[in-house]
Length: 358
Image 1 (cartoon, one colour):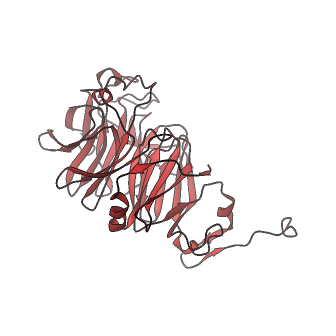
Image 2 (image 1 turned 90 degrees about the vertical axis):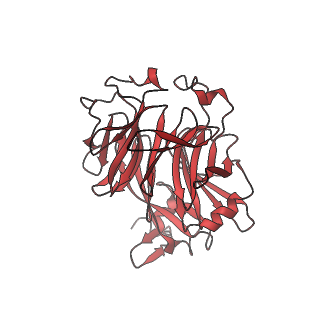
Image 3 (image 1 turned 120 degrees about the horizontal axis):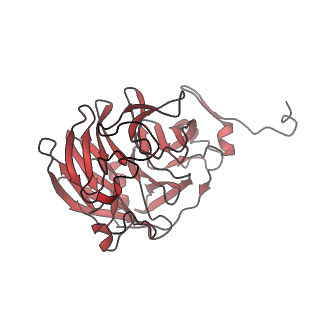
């Protein structure tokens, strides 16, 4: 992994002001571009951008000081060490958060999607094996739940399980693109095959959905993204019906609520994406970026757009209280000089030539 220079993005003039008002930054993953991206405001009402190269990053979890990211073969954990920012050797007195690599779970290629830390540890939607798994240092994964229509575990992506909403620190709702029990069986019925499942009861909450992603519980209400139609929806869990909050110009994945606002990830469709090229959303010009929706009114109040390089996003999260975050890669030489403890933070001096053999 390497730290990379910023790439072009455009944004409506009020975005930086809104992030300052909310007192934080945005973090997002692009599996297509292979990047974790930070978007932060500066004092001149402009946006500052930073990115880290990762291999196919997707699920992104912010849990207190901890940041967890799924990649192609691993799950990486970083922890904010703000005490190291003042004397950070490369740029002292620049950042208010410094994410240091702390652990890597070597999972293998499971195509992990949404993740959350909860009562039993790190829950992850294991799309390839059509289940919800626990990720730890014992196994590649430990399956703890699968849909009732899936009869066993095999790396064949039977229903394209993808999203997960938590309640009381446990998985509550999950999204899938079909209810099939054969490899890739969900593909022929994308527009009507999507479902939201209650994990506790294994009952269907909503059916006939066009490519649902990113189920979220906000203030006790269930929301989701209908990627195929570009719609943000509210789901009535009693009737299974959904109400469209807003229509957006993109293939939707990734959503977080921050204050009164929803931050929603938009993607373009890859030219070689034969699975999705005939979807309704593909009939109009698509954008990649983040749309900001005022939830009480359903009105879009601003956006960030990536005109090139980044064409798809998977996850979007808020970095609350962090106006200028920074992250070190797992191979950065600087990380070997940093010591972070509950009561003591220090940058160790590099070894001299005479010390290197000791």
